[in-house]
Amino acid sequence: MPIPDKQIRNWSFQADSTLPGWTHSVLRDALNHAKLLQDLDMEIYVQGSYANATNVRKDSDVDLVVQLKLPLEEDVRRLTRRETDLFYQYYGKTEYGWEEFREDVIRSLRKRFFVREGNKCIDITDVDSLLRVPADILPAIEFRRYSAFPSLEGEVYEEGVFFRDASGHAITNFPKQHRVNGKEKDRATGGRFKQVVRVFKNARRHATARIDKDIAPSYFIECLVFNIPNASFRAPLAEAYRNCLEWLNGQLGKFGDFQCQNKLVKLFGADQDQWSTASAQNLVQALDSQWGAWH
Image 1: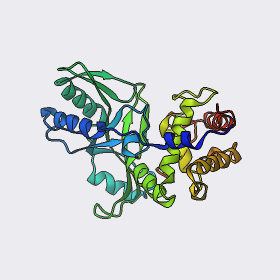
Image 2 (image 1 turned 180 degrees about the vertical axis):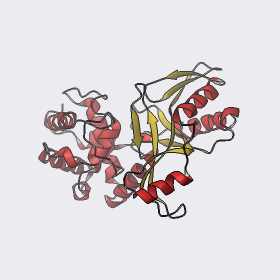
Image 3 (image 1 turned 60 degrees about the vertical axis):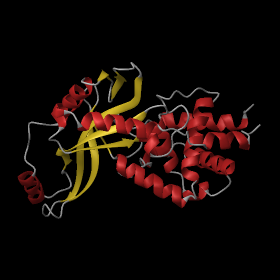
Image 4 (image 1 turned 45 degrees about the vertical axis):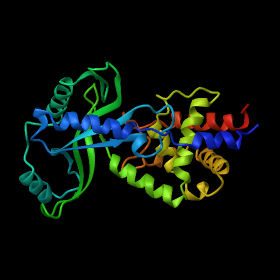
């Protein structure tokens, strides 16, 4: 039998939580009062499922970015030779970069928390209570993908973040564009987009053919659903979810040109921060099978 409408509605609900505000406040206070970071131009903000209102009950952690504004990492491949020279005239090289900033963030946090370094993020535990603070902290520096640099006042670029994983692999991402584009699609679909994303995330956890979170991470699921045409969402919730599944089923083998929600990076590819089409196809097929075999 198909998945009952009531189950679909339950899966669509956003998990209610005070975690983002509380975590943001605690960590902002710790970092803003850190002597090592006092003279740096930083921005601290929430990214991920909480920031995008697509969190479900099992999403327990807040993704918090600690972003250094200057110095920055750049992609100037689209600039002319003159523009490139002008860029480096204004933004000279510096010995302080992501590695040094990350170390200063870690040293600052260790004055107040127990710190565990992960592959990309930092895990912390409150020294006073020995309770784990529910946050993954990502130290990053500003990344700019330039399209024009006629002058300092006229520079044109997309702002992202730059960091490295534990193996030293460089990763760039565009969380602000991801958030803006998600809001726009949600408005264009009458509020259905984010509901359907949450249904997909919950359905993955209950799929008969087990789909591990490492194979189908929440971020990639959200990006996959973002590529579905708006018309598929314009229906009652259960029907909208089924429409989206059917559309993705019709695209099996054609995922190659899908974009991430930021509209700047391809969703699928060989890079470490891209998804494999095989994993996405396995997810879609498992959810399609789940639809007709619910009990």
